[in-house]
Structure formats: C-alpha cells, structure tokens
Amino acid sequence: MGWFRKTEHPKKRRIVQKRGYQASVIDRLTGDFRGSTLSANSELEKSLSVMRSRSRDLCMNNDYARKYLSMTTANVIGTHGIKIQARSKRDDGTYDREDNIAIEAAWKEWGNIENCTVTGRQSWVDVQNLAIKSIARDGEVLVQLVRGYKNKFGFAVQVIEADHLDESLNKRLQNGNRIVMSVELDKWDCPVAYHILNEHPGEQTQIFNGKNYNRVPASDVLHLFMTDRPGQTRGVPWMHTAINRLNQVGAYEEAELIAARISSSKMGFYTSEDGDEYAGEADSDGNLLMDMEPGAIEQLPAGVDFKSFDPQHPTTAYQAFIKTALRGAASGLNVAYNTLANDLEGVNFSSIRSGVLEEREQWRTIQNWLSAQLCRPVYRAWLLMSLTTQALPLPQRKYEKFTSVDWQPRGWAWVDPLKDQNANKLAIDLGVMSRSEVAASQGRDFEDTLAQLQIENDLLEKYGITVEQVEPQGDSNGQEKD
Image (cartoon, rainbow, N blue to C red; front, side):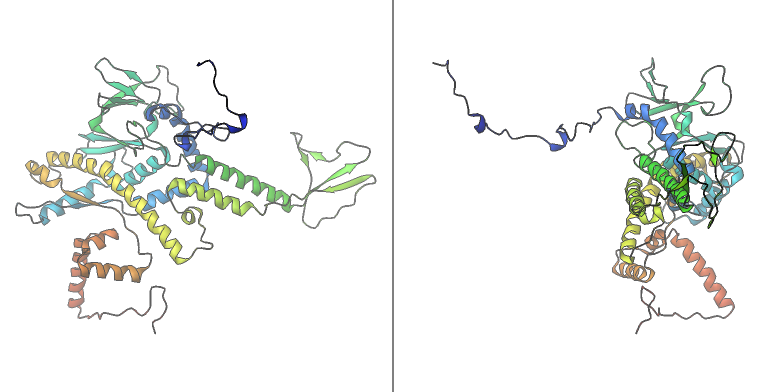
C-alpha cells in the first residue's frame, strides 16, 4: 500500500492555468523587455548627463526639436510673460487699490533689464523665457535669489545652468544629511543646500585644483524641475522619450535629401572590358571627379560601356514614414502633431479645434506650475527686500497683506470666435462664469479692461462721437446669414 501510484497518459496531462499579470510574463517575445527596479535618483545618476547633452544637440541641429522649444516658450510665457495682479485688501475686505497700484508699478520697474538679474542682461520676461526653455531642454534650471544686490530694491536673480550640479557628487555627511547629485538632503529628503560648481564643467579653461563647489543654502536657490517619481532629486529633459525618434527622423531626412540630390543628377558609371584603371580626374584626397550638367551627351571610347545609376529617391514611403515618426514624437512631447510638423494636410476644423484645446490644457498646466515654483517665491523675496530698502514705500509690518497676488499667464485667441463668445455670454447670463474669468482666459485683467473702457468712453464723450452696437453679419465660419 502506498508503493504504487497511478501515472497519467501523456496525452491527458492537466493544463495548468497561468496566474498573475500577463505584463510580468517572461517568454520568447518579452525576453528582451527588461524593466528596472532602481530608484529615480539611481536612474538619473547614470543617464542624466547623456540625455541632457543629446537633448541640447537636437535643439541646436534638429528642426522639430527647435520647433518644440519655441512652442514651449511662446505658449507658456508669450509676449508679455506671466504678469502680476496685486490683490491686497483692507480690513473691511475691499481691495486696496492704491497699494496694489504701487506694488504693480514697483514690480514692473524691478523687472527691467538694469534691475532684474545680476548680469544686467535679462528682464523679468527674459528670465521666464530662459527658465522654461532650460527646463524643457535640460530638464531643470537653478535660479539663485541674490539678496542685498546693488540696486535700489536690494534684490536680483541669477539663472544657473543645471551643469553646475555635479551628478558624481554623492556622499553621506557626518551630520546625518546626504548629498545626492550635488543636492544636500536631510532625513526627510528635503533640500538643505546646493553644492554648485564655481566653474561650468564645459568651460574651455584649465582647472589645476580640481572641482570647487560653493555651498548655497536651499532658501537662496530655486531648483526648478517637474517631478515624475517620489524621491526624485533632479529633473529629466522633457523630450527624453522622443530623443531617439527625432534623431532618427533627422538622419533619415538627411539621407533621403542626399540620395534625391544624387538621383536627380542621373549619374552612371563607365566600364571597360580590359579593366583599365580610371583615367579621369581626382582630388588631393583620391576622390574621383566627374563633370555633370543637364542634357550633356558624351561619346564613349571603344570598349567602354555605360551603366546607369538611378536610385529613385525619395521613395514613395518617405512621407508616410516621416508622418508616423513625428506623430510618435509629438505624443511624447504632449503637443499636437499638426503644430509640431507644420502639417495641416487633411485637417478639418473640428479635428484641429479638438487638438488645439487639448494642447492648451497642457500649456495651462505648465503655466500654473511655473507661477507657483518661480514667480511666487521670487516675488515674496523681492517684496521683503523692497520693503526693507523702502524701494516700495509701504509699511514693512504689512508684508503678509502685500503677499496676496494672482499670476496672470498669457491666454489664447478663440478657435471659433463667434461660438466661443456666445458660449461665454451664455455662461455669464447663467451665473456659472464671471467676466473676470473670461478676461483671464484671454490673458487680460478685467479691472484693467474696465479702466481702458472708461478712458475710451471719456474720449468719445469729449469729441462727441457715438458708437452704435453692430450685430454680427456672419456665422462662426464667416458665411453671411440669410
């Protein structure tokens, strides 16, 4: 008993059901699909420098990467930048108009070229453009707050490239802190200080004493990058998923262009039965030379044959390949393909409107992020120094009152002006939207708009001009109404 067991017939073996997520199965189709269990900082430590250099190369030499960079600055910052709207209130809850006007005027004066940066070369709008461009291209940027600077406000900023944070500087300190890629963190992973290289590592100068770092408290540095993972200490270039694709697209376009240029010449080769060496001209490097011109016909010597060379470039698949590749890159960059590629072929009004609205939501997200991460801390540091130096002639004890501000980024024109205006009017009439919100969507301040209207009405009254309201004569597509 118990010494014998029943064996199953080979053809009747039980089929064991697979359990677990199919995404975790390793087989012949997924054997080369390797994941990673490294932390965000470990991934960045070995990859960040290469990704940043490749992203910069594309932005310098690739048309589509350069287009994306210009799209980012144009849509996030715009012509006038992210503007301030002071919202200080009196004790009774009403807006203190006089103080708000004074704050906005002083902030505008500080934002001029001669006051804003320590280099004296950028205005506040330039700083915003430089910051968002660096973040998109390099993944991050440093903005140092320089208190006690030699201007009437006693305050300026300095924009520092991310290269000044050495990725190889990693160690634990005796006080319990640790340095991760030049960022000193406490036990909660909160930045305490930044160890900034005195010299850019890419400067073409000889350094004899090795690397020199300047430890700057975190309270004086804004480290701007968008976080993708918890515990992440450094930023990732925004086009990191599209880098290889854009590079291949650029190389393919170059190859097709050269091939098409050669193909258009309709060149060929002379062959000889006795195998004589080439008797034509050659340059100093040994490259063979041949004169070619359109419509030329030459007589071949005896015993010499001609082999035509017609590679037929560009191929018929060229356009489809480029469009497919750029669609993938546009998805990685979170922008519309039609905008990135300047391709409006086959686009109708509804599809382009849907794409534009979705893209604008992405830009608004970045605008709100930049307002909180850059504009707000710079303003609060400027306000305290301006009150201290009396460059802003308001009571310093009311600092908290004056910190109440809104940031108004640029807006966009309506995709369908008549329909969108009617929709806004209906929303206002229903009480679900205010006029201030409508003005803000266009990048304007409602109070400034009312002030301009008042000036215009006073001028019209002064010169005795009456302006009549005119009903629109067309529909949203510009067609005349019946």
